[in-house]
Amino acid sequence: MIFTAKTLVQHFPATAALLGIDDWTRFCALLPGTVDAETLSASFLDFSRQNAGVPYAVDLFSLERERALVESSADDVPEAVDARAVNLTLRLLEVSFRGLAERLHGRSLFAEEPEPGEEYILIWRMPANGEIRVEAASQEDLLALKIVAEDLDIRDIALNGGTTVGVLDDLLFRAGKRGILVRPQSKIERTPEIFRRGVIQDEAYFLARGFTVQWHITQACDLHCKHCYDRGDRAPMPYDKALRILDDLHAFCEDRHVYGNVTFTGGNPFLYPHFFDLYKAAADYGFGLAVLGNPTQRGTLERMLAIQKPSHIQISLEGLRERNDAVRGNGHFDRSLAFLRLLQELEISSMVMLTLTRDNIDDVIPLANFLRTYTETFHFNRLALVGEGAKLKLPERGKLKAFMHEYLRAAEANPIMELKDNFLNIALHEQGKPLFGGCAGFGCAAAFNFVALLPDGEVHACRKFPSPIGNIYKQPLGQIYDSAEAVRYRSGCSACAPCPIRAVCGGCLAVAYGCGLDVSSEKDPLCFIGMD
Image (cartoon, rainbow, N blue to C red):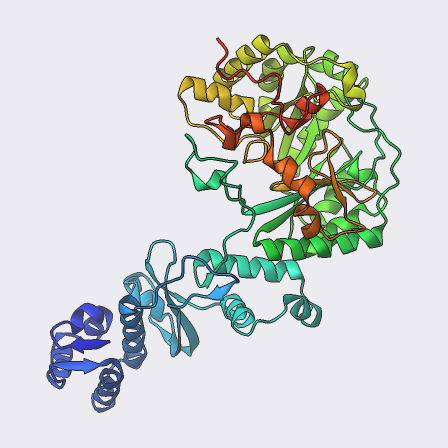
């Protein structure tokens, strides 16, 4: 970069202000008409030695020079990389005073003067918008840069450094979010030939940045619900195999460039004999953690909190007290309310889920209003006529359409009412309102951004109906995810392909299956798009 005497003050405003107009003018007068960065720095160093002034002036000048070089650099941040990489525009400056970044940002009037002490400063251009950032480097920043620049294995660092893979993963994630590292794009992306943009253009509905394993670690359950999808006799997952699965999931997420989540469920996951050990192991990998289960005791929750706070705990209710207890057992409703209060006391986020049937459809909105002070989130999914649920009935299509519109109206006044069921997008589309991500953020996302893992190692596209795509005891997760069966399920129903809101709907494969339909070609029979 070439500097001119006339433009120096534009690039070095903090240094000019520090020296004062007289000394800055004298320095500029010593320079030729144009000067390169190296010569300019040497000239300022000589000037500072001969004119002893503020001791940190040379470091401040060097910092402004580095910022100017980043601003003028021809190095563009690449739009796509195959692996995590250091931002090409990043410059690392070692200085002898602390607090120079604050001075550069013009906040020195409200902060202490820079003090002697070694510090590293990062200067870089943000990948998303080109903004120039100047910040003091933390030890976390320096470690993240070292890991990526030297291609170090975080497993080895964790093993030898007394930390966890999860801590290091989080460190790298934060560095990528700040822009000092460039992150590769997720490989979990909707097939454009099948999932056309239509009225949905937002890339967020086609590219998944996270992947979730809904992990049914045990079939053991202390309830006997009338709509249970699977009360089969599967042995609890052996703990040693569970640990290997965590390692496999971590490798899968690394390869696909997504962050991993584990949702522990069952049965009742709290009845799994190694629950706390497995929960801690998953936390050590840095996975986001959630629990779908039944009400439990304070001691159980406190043991979880001592390891890692879950993102949320979800329980289920099937209507108001009388209707719920007819499905889930006497006293369940009141135990659930007490449990929700306990979660609030312990500051654990809660969700309440309802399985929508013909019998409880009129209870949904009254229940949501009743729960308004008990939980942060309430939502519903429709019944799949699978397992013991085959004895129940689905709402009629006309009734369902009216209910979806009624739910949307009620949700405007009740903040806990979350939009989840894909068919709510049909109602929104009919009303000309913005759509949302649907059931799992991508409409029916079976085998796309989540899979269900059963205690015997079977992996299913969705837990609500038999949809096996492999066995994790016999195949790595990546191979299962890429299998023909997994591709078939995540491609969804071909009859939905022309639909303008396909990307955030696709109906429910489990509902179609329960009605005896071919989920690959016959759409959800309750679809009411275009229905008068």
